Image (cartoon, rainbow, N blue to C red; front, side, top):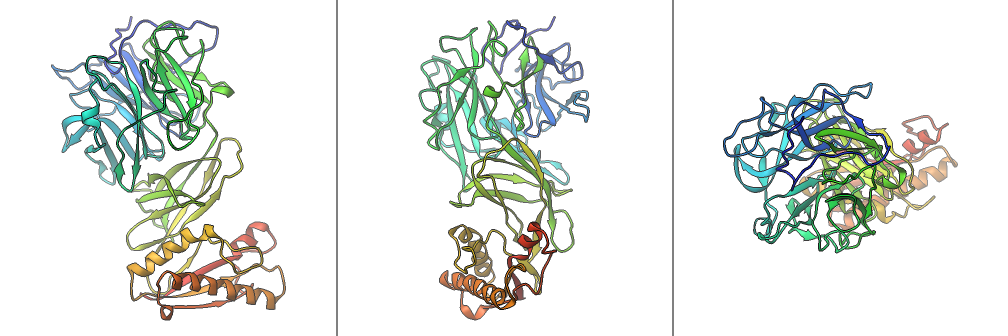
Amino acid sequence: MKIKLLVLALATTKLFSQTGYELESLGPNVNSKYYELAPYITPDGKKLFVVRGDHPENTKSPDYPNQDVWYSKRLSDGSWDKAQHLGFPFNTSRYSSIIGQSSDGNVRYIKGYYSKGEYIKSGFSVSYLKTEGWTDPKGFDVPKYAKMEKSQTVSNSISASNNILLMAFGEDEKNDDHDIYVSILKDGDWSRPLKLGPKISSQYSDGTPFLASDNVTLYFNSNRPGGYGSSDIYMSKRLDDTWQNWTDPVNLGPQINTNAWDAYFTIPASGDYFYMIKDGDVVKIKAKEEQKPNPVVLVRGNVLNAKTKDPIGTSISYFDLATGNELGIATSNPKTGEYTIILPYGKNYSFKATQSGFYSVTENMDLSSVSSYKEITKNLLLSPIETGQVIRINNIFFETAKSILKSESFFELDNLVKLLNDNPIMEIFIAGHTDNIGNDEYNNKLSKERAAAVVAYLTSKGIVATRLTSDGFGKSKPLADNSTDEGKSLNRRVEFTIIKK
């Protein structure tokens, strides 16, 4: 019989299912004769982290319970390989817990504020995958958190977009009831914790928050009245960006909740299965439609040098194309250039990789129309900033059959303005191209006018006109076959050539 200690939570008792709903154990490769708790499934559903207690391979400490993080990888047949100890620097003599991992697997977040491998105080730390391995976790500051957090236990999670931190803690050291708070990463700094609205942070104890990959659907536990046990799992959806307005929390029902203390709930981007702890083991349960988060698109690929096709490890940002607001960040693998980002439906996105010495070629993905969960492969190319390099300007939009720039183009053109400001002697040639629809005279005229419109925008932003030349080539220089819509789209383009660096 498993010993059930729950330092990461408030209490624990033996759990059992109250309905005939099928629970599926992840099996002996994940579960052990020791106890498991606080599972975390990565957004792509391919790796599971779990805290395992009292295992002889755990890091020993006379002052803290024996709890370390272990992980297992999902195999091609859907089974899980044998769990492995995560090791240093993620397991230390203190409580060890993974509170999030980026969707690409190249960034991990842990509980506790660390510096140079040493625990400093309560808080949060981040570690990055480099060519030589994982960096030592480094603490990051959340303003006022240290003064606000006074409870004996805390629970936290970071969104797959890497820019939303959810925290559950109490501000009264005499009362360990928790409320849920959010901190947002913007321009490199985390915001002061903001308590979620009263539908979430109630007069009862609310904790173990998990934000689904849509960045809208929240799963949390609460001891509010009407539950099946001492604490149940609830779901609610965010209605706006204030983090104050939410749908009424819905109890996930007896197939999820028991007559005991239920907590720590995790779900991959696909939204197909929930993962949780039952009776000290990790189980999965197929999610009902009404319990699922909003569908998202998982985009994966490689960041490559556009000229040599060599992989590049760097940062990736994605934005709301209509507003220019940054919505999330990711990191490509330093050895392979592999990246993964998750884009919720409902917006038109731009995303780009950035690296010193390269121009960031921005990609566009219009997800305005809601559909089902999808996985898409798209490589990101970084063009070296060197004389003679030809670079396509993506995410540039004109009114139909006209040379009038749409406002959605300004975000991309501002990147070109920045390039020219950062390289004050650079000169570029801007070329417009069309597909084969229409006669030569019309296409030549339209392509020249569109290239000139880009020049006009750049000069309006302070770029000296003598650094810019332009021309249009109509349909005379296609990149692809004009017999397909995709080919026509590739041929309708504006690009620039670096004439002088």
